[in-house]
Amino acid sequence: KAFLDARGMAMQKKFGQNFMVNRASRQRLVDALDLAPDSRVWEIGPGLGAMTDEILKRGAKLSAFEIDRGFCAVLGEIFEDRPNFSLIPGDVLKNWLPAVERLGVPDCLFGNLPYNIAAAIIGDMISDGIRFNTVVITVQKEVALRMAAKPGTEDYSSFSVLCQWAYKVTPLMDLAGGCFWPRPNVTSKAIKMTKKDDWPSCQSPAIFMSILRGLFSSRRKTIKNNLSAWIAVSGRAPAGAEADALTRDILGRAGLDPSLRAEDLELANFLQLA
Ligand code: SAM
Image (cartoon, rainbow, N blue to C red; front, side, top):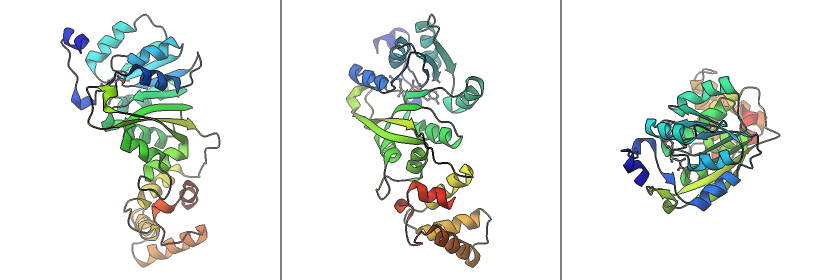
């Protein structure tokens, strides 16, 4: 706070700025990356670089995405003589794809993510076929629970299936409000995701992701009703009797009971349907 005051800077709520001020937690999060000295890391939202410094000290090569111009200026000053640091100023949602095209996919993704865009970043990256070996992120607890949720539970959603399609998802630790400054009014949770060696492929990831959203679109409806609606909207058969007949045929061939709900299905079922 004193540092920001002295520079005439203020925290910006719209950018979800909460610094992780608990040293032990910062250490544990960086440890969870299992860095090798030549690892390439992307950090989303470094803020004033508290964890950036720790990662650089371990010899990794780090690119940081930061939207706040004031923070970018500070980061530039702090890390200007570190050859393993580079800054990508601006909105990560716009900048990450051009960065992949320019630099390739790094080994690790890291960040105490701005809460308002956390799910979008992770969802977009998986949807676009980007896989990191290791992801260690801090997100709002509800988002973390959805990422790690198992079938048949309340938190299980299309986002759970998407994350678990690409990664093994492991909850790391809860981070109470007091770990941050300013204190957020939500609880946070750190999560680790590791790339699956046997990443289950499917012929059309686009159809898989679309069916996934379709089947979860009305959680209370059966997979038969949601799939029939998806078939009609996707133009594969006219709504009504024809979409219903095609749905029954597809579910029959997949050996799935039409009265199940999306929350009852496992990843393999969604892939099979796609
Ligand atoms: N890493 C720091 C820490 O843990 O102390 C700060 C984390 S703070 C929760 C989120 C950071 O993400 C802030 O530095 C904020 O300015 C940045 N940020 C917010 N939206 C962003 C966006 N769209 N693109 C890049 N950075 C963003």
